[in-house]
Image 1 (cartoon, rainbow, N blue to C red):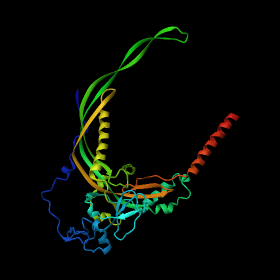
Image 2: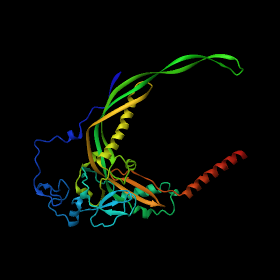
Image 3: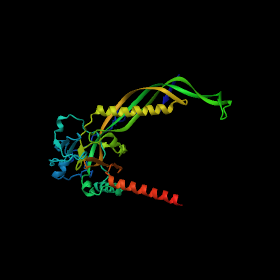
Image 4: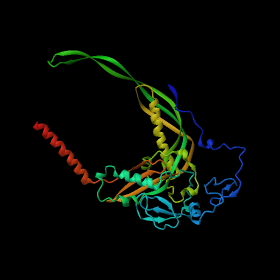
Length: 372
């Protein structure tokens, strides 16, 4: 038996979306912008590429901020493997991912890594991120260790652009399974009652009829983020999702001015394998939801992927990592939406005291009940 399961219509691939060119397009003309070199027409007050006021010169430090990444200092953490770019005058560094000071400087030109395609700017200010951390840390504050200094911990929060791979692809699945349909029959049987007498009874017995079924399923997937950072595992990154991807803008170096940014340390093929693993789980879930009958078994799915497109994006995150009694704790804030997540230490002594008070209260209530 053959069935065709079509979940959604196939949308255009990313290549198709960006392949349209206006035949009447004319390249911009005008004087070059003093910041980025983009042509600016005489009536424009601001540069259309970087926003610099037209006809003004940037100070030397601002020019350095809008220069390419090659003029930054790059550090690699020997503890977690994260690679971060920062201001060129910074010669020492503490890893924002694991709070390690064992870092070395490296040259990114020898890596041959892909440049970012898109970026989302910070919408949450550092002050707002600090307030979110303070509010988060105060929740259940009684259980927080008394020797944890909030002020010293908060000073370690950094705004950083983290690399994420974004994939889109068409998944086509061929599947087969055995479908089970329940039916019931009445069965007569004999047993003995409490007095030892033989009695005849009936009962309803469920049976399952099985038959083979196969079909096809297809769906276009897009917008799934895979962390490109060794310092930030995928599970931690998903705790502050979602990001609003329609806000993505074409990458320009000036977006990074004044912020840290991590070099991509997970290559495209490894990220693609992780992404397809997630899409495979979604395919199985969707196919299972479409199954007829009451139950199924021996489900086999073979999925092929096509129209694969990848983009490397830099997304804004506030990151705070600190160690308390040799254990690493991490707090994250989505720099676009403000969503936060993290782990914080608790005082074992205070937890034990709280448990003891609860047990004592229960004991008092029980004694009062017995007394009355």
